[in-house]
Length: 366
Ligand SMILES: C[S@@+](CC[C@H](N)C(=O)[O-])C[C@H]1O[C@@H](n2cnc3c(N)ncnc32)[C@H](O)[C@@H]1O
Image 1: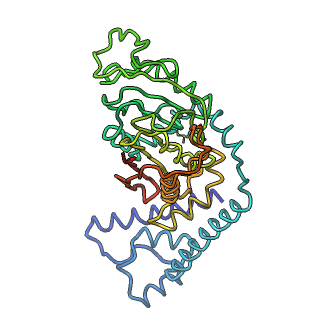
Image 2: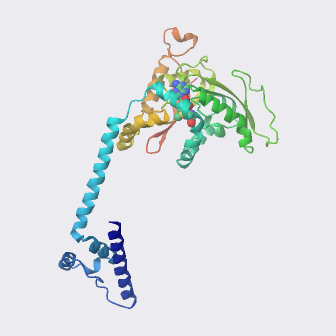
């Protein structure tokens, strides 16, 4: 088979070479090769001598293909490709196994130490790093709580207006990674305008500022403390933080509506909840179909549901919060009858990546 293909290719090439020689010598532009009789007859009937390139003729001759067969060949290719894709779709749909919340939690523990490396390049090339920067530089200030903080990927983007940072995540492995990254940040980013130092949870921001060494004088040296725990029941009183940040957490929480209500609860009146998320697309139905189809595979690999309806989650959580539904909180008032809470104004709601990326700024009114 291989020999036949090589022989055919050699003959085709020599035909073309002869044709080019003829052209250089001012030869005719008519067909340079002896065609398969059926091909020649067809081409003659249709008066297409000059429209067939020598390459096409060579390939047609070697394969015994007639011009009208090309259409059939292309049609076969399309049907074949659709068949393969359809088969894959059915296979995936039948075989994708369910992923439990417990399995997703275990995924975070497993991927914590490779998470940064695995996603950094794709975040840079798809503009996600820019999105992080824009959101945090413009809106983060004061004492910031970052939930589902993962490996502290937002550290490079906090502005000097931030005075203290509390990083919280359900996964102990993620918190361990985050702590190591914070401790190493100044060494890795000696020219960055912000320095970070770690403090015990709940300590004042001036405690334990480490020696900046040979590092350039930073504009701010932000104290960072850590907490391992779920966002759905934050162990803070209401109205504690100036800013609450969640990047790519709503796709990961077991109960995203309760988690967002909690973020609103612990945010001070006048403060902001900043969200950068991914989820289903309201722009392009085929994209959301694809996300839903691949959702279980994605959840098994990355621990998150990338087809959640982020817009609906934000709407439900803000409405429930305003109506006073804060039953999941550890706030002392939680067991009392629901009382209306401050209103939440959506200061910014942007989407990107064909509608699968979301950036929100929620402003808790005074
Ligand atoms: C997609 S990662 C996002 C990490 C980080 N925020 C970022 O922007 O790269 C999701 C994170 O949510 C954490 N997580 C999942 N469920 C959680 C929960 N109920 N409460 C707090 N963190 C949770 C996971 O451990 C993981 O670190």
